[in-house]
Image (tube, rainbow, N blue to C red; front, side):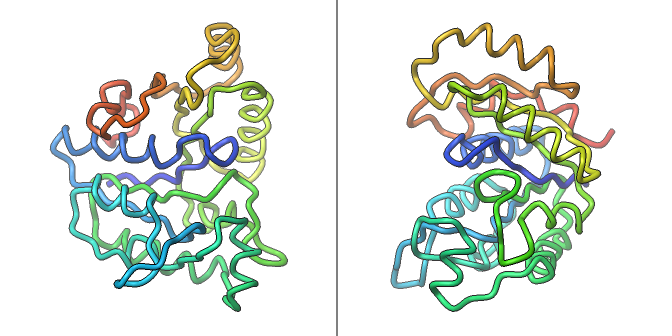
Length: 227
C-alpha cells in the first residue's frame, strides 16, 4: 500500500487535475485507489449538503466506493483561505481532527491513496497550525505539483526546501502546464529538472476538459508503487 500527500507550488496549479490522473493511472495498473481532500473551501450548497468540485472529481476518479463525507469531511462555502473561511463559519480545524479523517480512509487499505492539500505547503488551518503538519503527523511522502507559469522555478524550489526542512520525503514532482502559453517553457522545465533532486513523474500539457484517463498517459507512477 502506498499513501502520498499531494501539494502544489501555489493555489490553482492543478493539484486535483494531477491527483485524478494519478488515481486513473493506478486504476489502469489494476490497483485499488482512494483519495481524501480533508479540507475544501469553495463549496456549493446542494440538497445533499455542501459539495466541492475538486472532491467530487476525486470521488469519480478513485476506485473505492467511499462516501462524499469520507472524502471531504470539512466543507467550507467561501472560496477563500481555509482558516479564514472556518473562522467565519465558526468552525475549528485542527491537525488532530484531520489526521483522524485521513486515517479512516487509509484504513480502507487501498493499494494507492492520495491525500490532497489546499493551496500551497504553508496554508494556515488555525492560529498556530498549517496544513503542512498533516503529512508530518501521518509521516507520508509528498508529491509536488508545479504549475508551469512565470515564477514557477522560485515557487518550486522554495516549496521543496520547506518540505525537506519539515523532514518529509518528496516522492516526485509533476510539471503541469496550467496556462496555455508560457514564455520559455522548455528552458523553465529544464531548469526545474536540473534543480529538483527527485523524480519527475510527468509533464502534462495544457489539456482543458481532458478526462483523468486521458491525462494519465502523461504520467509514470512506477516510482511511486511499492515493489
